[in-house]
Amino acid sequence: MKKLMIFTAIGTLALSGLTNAAPVTSEGGYAYDRNQLSDPSALNWNIEACSHGAITPDTQRQLAKLMGVPESRVRLEFCRRILTAYTKGAIPYNDYVQFAGSHVMTASILRALKRAGAGPQKPQGRGQDDIVLPVSAKMDSGETFKGSTIASHGNGRFAVQSSRRSVKCSGTYDLRDRHPTVILPVKCSDGRTGKIEVTRAPDLMSAWGKVKLSDGSTGRLTVGSVRAPL
Image (cartoon, rainbow, N blue to C red; front, side):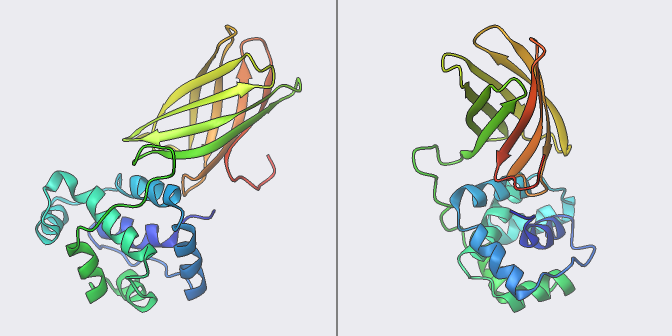
């Protein structure tokens, strides 16, 4: 899944105070991104990522008044309302172009910001704010791991089970760390420890990396839908 242009142009641009024009995707690309966000997990994840964007004090005050929310909730609520409206087709392509290219607050965008509405649907079987992605790792020794990552409220955790069945490995990570490549510690139930070097895609919906455990074993790891060869 590529980086969503709607997130770049509307989320980051508006929260930074509308200082620069953003690149405008094609109408086909716009429709493709909207289809990708129809997945509740993808929508939730992009709302979370967008909500960490920078914002000027003046823009924060203006948006708080427009949306009728406390200033402390401006970033999250702005991203939720805009991305949810976009996903539902409430922001037409032409309005997006005007906003992204010329900073014009069109009627559809103003309506989206003034409407509290309901948040995105929660993935079945998970908490409302949980973002769940599949994880798999293949060690050079032939041992494999499968499991998932779960991100919620700025915190993340992962848990995988080895092909040895009785062995489980897990760890935690900080969603607020915006570096594209991070080092995560991992602990296993058989006493092994290790580190995972993870490189995240721009949309935060996939990642890939290297695993090294204390017994000397090494391997490759993927998160989400990674199609590029590792």
